Length: 331
Image 1 (cartoon, rainbow, N blue to C red):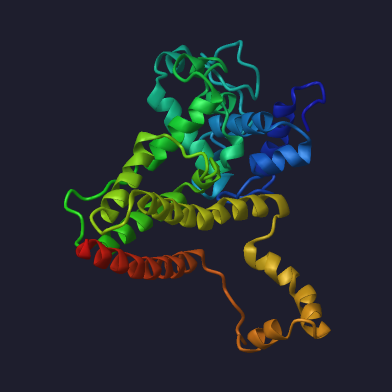
Image 2: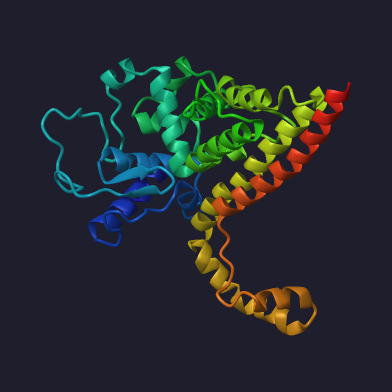
């Protein structure tokens, strides 16, 4: 273990480095997330991020989107090997070296790409200006030359994520096919970047150009079918909030796994005695009858649930549009 006089991030990095060297954490195995480190060591998320960044710069770990930070495959000399000649003398052991070249090559695009990778790997709570600087190996204040605040960083990173998918120049025929494509496109983005669903309540919409492109696609699909403007907007907000509402569980599940160390199935298995007690109580006959019809249990698949809900929403909208179109035609 590193001496207690060392900064917390160095002590954490040293302990994780020891576990990797001892084989307690094998290549490909996930290391504690920033949330878990913060909880176990009683430190801030920025400190946890800094510790993982030290190990990443040493090549001991790597961040994989929606997996987290894992032990990297062995490459080069093992941890603790003396620095090669030419290593700056003022770089302390375990301290990420901030090279002048890295500072000089810094730009907004690099910052946002690093922020996107960080949010994808560790979640929205881990995203900060300091954490991005640590990930890039530059001084803590360097990103402020290109991004003014954490709030701006989050919004710009979200806009980058929402811009990863585009729509065809020739839309499919029919309003329903267009809305299905728009909904599935948004779902795929939330799937790829689950933290997006945590950003803002639907009552405070994000004013982002790339998010607006998704809204434009949906609004154009609803045009010309006899719906008044309020109904068109209500329909768009309802559809978007449905997609976001399902997607919010993606990040919550990742957070729950990081906090408890249990997968979704492991957590459900641990609840079996409690559910059995509810059935045995006789207070919930409908639930008891339902469980009896599911001998193999019930697997909650968010992708299947999304498709089920989307079909039902559009079925209901079909009847509304048909009535509106009939009334519009008679006017």
